[in-house]
Amino acid sequence: MTNPYLLLSASLLLALGGCNAKQVPANTTSEVQATAAAPAPEQAQPLKLGAEQMELYLSQLQGKRVGMIVNQTSMVGQTHLVDTLLSRGIEIKTIFAPEHGFRGEADAGAHIKDGTDSRTGLPIISLYGSNKKPKPEQIKDLDVLLFDIQDVGTRFYTYISTMHYVMEAAAENGKEVLVLDRPNPNGHYVDGPVLEKEHISFVGMHPIPIVHGLTVGELANMINGQKWLDGGRQAKLTVIPMDNYDHNMPYNLPVRPSPNLPNAQSIALYPSICWFEGTDVSVGRGTPTPFQIIGSPYYQKKDFSFTPVSTPGATNPPHKDVTCYGLDLTDPSHAQPFTLAYLLEMYNNSTNKEKFFNNFFEKLAGTSDLRKQVIAGKTEAEIRASWEPALTEYKTLRKQYLLYPDFN
Image (cartoon, rainbow, N blue to C red; front, side):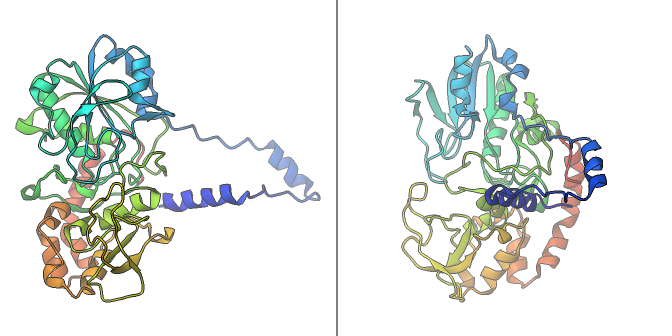
């Protein structure tokens, strides 16, 4: 299978290098004629996001009271979807903000306060912290809950957990749910251990692998179809799909989805290094390259070092003001699909193995086995073999909910 990141890198090199079209030699008349007679290559149709296809969903919002689950990624071109819909006469009553807030500026795990949007005057209700699920009184005057947030395709990225709770609240209170679909930048493969039910938390609510290979629209259909909402309820759900999307399509996010995922490199590496947040290893929060470097004061090799400091979006990062030693993963060659290599490297070369893992690790991994396997010195191949049966079963289930051509 062609690696979409290689395709993306090649296209960027061509664009930046100003590569000229190849010239046909003047003495190859027959080749010139054959080329002229050949049909022009078919041009790829432009991607259209769910939010951009207003002809498919405006009628479902007109005359209804709308609550919007949105953040800084909810853009239609250069305009926020809230402003776009207000200009079309849609009655928006409330904005619900996920982790990192409506404008996406808060630290991971930070308490998000309710408030008012200064631009529109609309009330903002946080769906993070103690109020992860909309309360009945918060949606009683609404008809439709619209979800339009950019995801990055991993089980522990909490926007999909917010979507779950929105669907659950809607199902319990007789409200409609409208999901506007967006690409999955890690949607070109499926990998990792499938979540075990005893480890369900806000960073893992569904029996899916770490890299689930679904768009938010496909996942919403799966949540509904598999009756994963509380009590086996199903929401009155409509998904507005994208046009001209497939799971092999590279997609470079135009807006960073959260403060510490600033670019395509960090998003590609995120599945393989996020679970370091359940260890004593820094993922580069508080540096210019979060989720592109990893390190710890206890890593034995000293070839690369960095020192986390307080920054916007990472005001109190792990190992703040302490020198960490580790790995520089900023080169594009490290943006490989999901791997255990970094986890095994950092553990095997730690001088602090007894305290390497913390209690958050199982929630991120979704399994009790991985910590034990790493400590026991298992290889990546041996560890992968243990989760393969559940992963194979998930891949079969996933096929039932695909809205777009798959990567295989």
